[in-house]
Length: 136
Image (tube, rainbow, N blue to C red; front, side, top):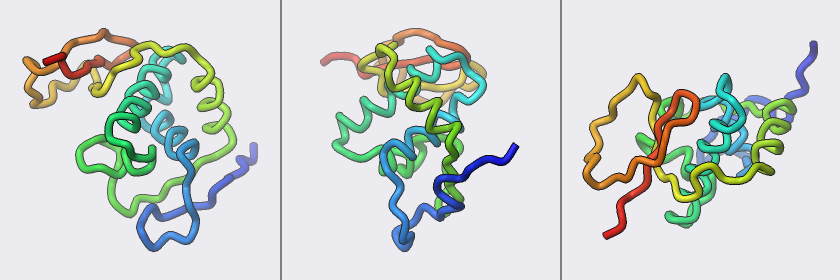
């Protein structure tokens, strides 16, 4: 089957002449972080992206490019977003939030070196655990 590439092999850098939209970056994040996960897990990952965007007042693409935010991201990596990825994003985006205030997540097989005393555990969905900062 021929896949229609909506954005042909873009380099995500300051010199790129094509601008990725928030939708493109969110679709790519979902694909890279939760492609084989159930829809509810995809939504929980999207909740984290949306919360980070709100808290940091940044775009999804800026959030994706931040250092140490997503294990898949490398500077100057090729970002390809296809029709199927955008369709999955559209379905996930219409769902009710799983963890409305989630700010962090990690795979269940990974234990990041975080200060867990500052985090409130929200739950596990699929193969990821979700957290938010504790209230002061």
